[in-house]
Every structure is written in structure tokens, then in C-alpha cells.
Amino acid sequence: MLILQPAQGTLQFVSPGVEIRDWQMAVVANGAACRSADAQFEMVQEQPPRWRWSWPQLGLVWECRAVPAGEAILIESRLENHGDAPLALGAVYPLQTATPLSFGDPGGIVGLPLAGELTPRRVYPLRHADCPRVSKVKWQLYNRAGGRALQVGFLTFQRADTNVSLAYDPTGGITTLQAWCDFAGWQLAPGASTPVETLIVAAGDDPYRQLEEWAELAAPRAGARRWEDAPIGWVGWAWVDSFTVERYEEVLLRNLQAVRRRLPGFGVNYVWLSIGNLKDGDPGDWLSWNDDLFPHGREYLAARLRELGFRWGLWCAPFWLVSWLEERVAEFHDALLKNSDGSPMVVRPEWQFGKAGETPKAQRPCMYALDPSHPKTLAFLRDTFAAYRRWGVRYYMIDFLHAGAGNISSFPYTSHHDKALVAGPEAYHTALRVIREAAGDDTYFLSSTGPSIHNTGMVDAIRTGTDFGEGRALYPDSYFYPATFVINSRAFW
Image 1 (spheres, rainbow, N blue to C red):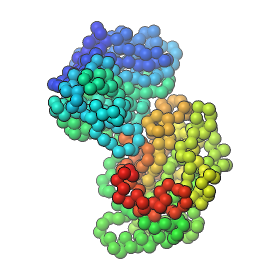
Image 2: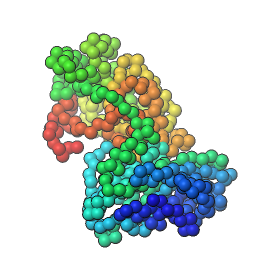
Image 3: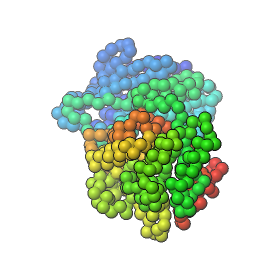
Image 4: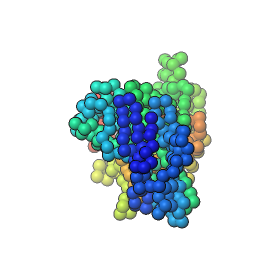
């Protein structure tokens, strides 16, 4: 149950075994913290509750409503600028309390946090020193001693960077709790309004049910894609070095013939080519064909795959541009993400495949990142994936997406081109949407290194297995040399 306390400018959440007191809401606008405790309050509707916080000195109004959803409360809201000047929005806090939570025995609390990127996930006792204190999108908490579950998070997360943080004390338990979405300086124009990411607070006795119910509520809001059958296929270089020992085209076709001969009825209908199709193996030079590894050409390969009944797929790191493609780097100079000093942001210090793998280590190129909001980037991605579609490509492993994901990932950038887009999720999704539209709705996307949950709505699945036995080229002084050493190594990923 949510209780509004307008005299104090606070809310209170009460459920058996769980209580959040002195719950404030706050907005950082033009660098100033605007707290609900200092706002004018107006009750718009009693049931379900709708209310309004106002800060007349800024012309800022926050329209809120509480929506009951089973054992959860949702806070849906909008910010409005009633003033004459733009408002630069920073962090927006639908929930903020510095009063310890009532949540049972402090020593029995465990939690499941979410990192911004694809990493192993653990349930942590909050008392452990290595337990994170900030979680992307949602914190799932459980008090094992009392059998009470608490979920605090967001059901929408594709526009502003969403986080939930807590502080913990072994005797006091959870002493502070904050949930915020970061608009990162995005400007709300005079007379305009913008939605705030939807908050969820759920309390009950089953953390698994809460996670399932979160997914059911979040999926339609995020436009989650559903692919009815598993796209079963073969990675076209597994177990064989098809770069420096054998020729990729021959390896590929003989194995696909073997699949058809030896695995009838198993529905193996996809094949994934990785890097070998690229001339010199250079990311960013996506449409240049490798005539050394595929000497009969692209049209021949596509025809043979059709004859054998395979849909073909490619590896692509859409935000990457290898540094030694000097003409293209110069062409896209203003579309590269930059460091604070204006230099291009390096998202991988060394590339080690194709021509780069045959180059002395000290001379190998690095990798730059394309600005996901820049018109040049968007046109480049559209042209690339539209061409791939004409080639017949209907499957992708899209990789290293963290390069363009900003503050939801490991490469937060200082600035991006299109300031009409919120830095991070919204700019990132703008580029993913262009890729999806060009590739076609009937094309399967598997994502790998980079964001996980933030890819919802654009990709069909997220890769969670390790690399092993895949026949990586035996380039000296390279990561994974030789590749097969990671077989059965649970420590690797």
C-alpha cells in the first residue's frame, strides 16, 4: 500500500514485512536538486492516486500517478516545463529515502543485482564486501530469515539510464535506497513534457515470482521480440583454422554438406560466417569481400547455401571502426565518439585478426567507436545492413555493442551529436532501430559483448556461452592463442 504524506512531501510504502518510510521524490534541473519536500503539492485524484509536485521558481511540474499491479505499485509520471527557458535535466529520482527500511533481520538479506553489460550474475549476501551497491534497472532483494521479497526497479529503461542503489549496514540493514533515471543534461524545452521511466516497487514472499512478473510487465513496454523456433545452426569455422591453414569457403561448404548428410531432421538451417568474409578482416569495411578466403565470390556462396537449404549469417560489430582504415576514419572523424580532450575514444586497443593478426604486435591497429546518434553513422549502418539483406543475410551475431552504448556500458562518452536524444539508452536504441529496419523483421539478431537487458526490443537473443574450439586463426601474440585452450574452462566466462 502506498501512502501519500503531502504535509511532509513524502510517500510511504507499507506491506507485511516491508516498509519504506520517508520516501521522497527529486529532480535535478539546471544543476539544482528539487525535492518533493520543498515542492508545492496538489492532489489530482484520490483513487488510484494522482498528484502533482511543483517548483514555481523553475516552472517545473511533476505529474505522478500510482498504479496497483498485484503485490506491486507502479509510479508512472511526466515532467513538464511551464517556464520560459529550457531545463537541463539530470538525475530524476522517483524514489529516495535515507531512513532505514523495515525489512527483517539485516543479516539475512541477499540480492540479485544487474550489471550494465553481459557478465556472470550472482546472488550476493548484502553483508559481503564484494556485493555491488548499484544495480542497473532493478534490485531484486530477499530476506531469507523472514521469507520476504522486495523488488525496486524500472519497467521502462530504453531512454534514460536507470539505476537502483542502496547502502547497507550489518546492524541497520538497508539504510538508504534510491532509484533514479539519468537524463544526462538533456534539455526539456519550454511548454514541453517528457515521461519519466516507470518505477516498480513490489513486496511479497517469492522473489522468483517477482522476477517473472517484472518480465511480464516490462516485455510489452520494451517491445520484446518473440522468435517461435530456435535458429539452429553451425559456426562456419568451428574446430578448423579456416584463416591460415585451410580456406574458409572449402571448410564451410564441406561441413554444410556433412550436416545435410548426417543430421537430417534436426532442423539445422543456419550458418554463421565470422570475420572471414571481410577483406583483410577489418571491422568497419563491412561490404568489402575477402576473395582470398572465398575465391568464388559472394554470389556463388549465396547460391550454394540456397541449394543446401541454409540461411546465412554474419558477425558484425556495428559501432567499430578499425584505425588503419585511414580514409574512412577521416571521413567519419566528426562521427566518432570522443574523449574529453577531443581525441577519438579507443574501445579496443589492439585488433588481432586478418591482416592485423599477421602484423607485428606493436603495429596493430586499435578500434574507434561510431557515435550512435550521428547522421553519418546512421546512414552508414542503414546502407550496410540493407546491402547485407540484398545479399540474403538473415542472421547476425552483433557484437561489441558496448562501444556505442554510453553510460549503460563500459564506454561512457562525454558528448554525442544529436542532443535531442538522451545520452546512453535512447541514442543507442536509435542506432539499433536503424539496423533492425534495414536488416528486416525476419532477420535474427544474437547479441554478445555489450549490454544485456537494454537490447530488448531490437535483438532476439543474447549470447551467454563461452568461445571454445572454434578454430581461431593461429596468429602469434594474440588473445586466444590457440583458441582451443578454453575448452571446459569454467573460469574463462
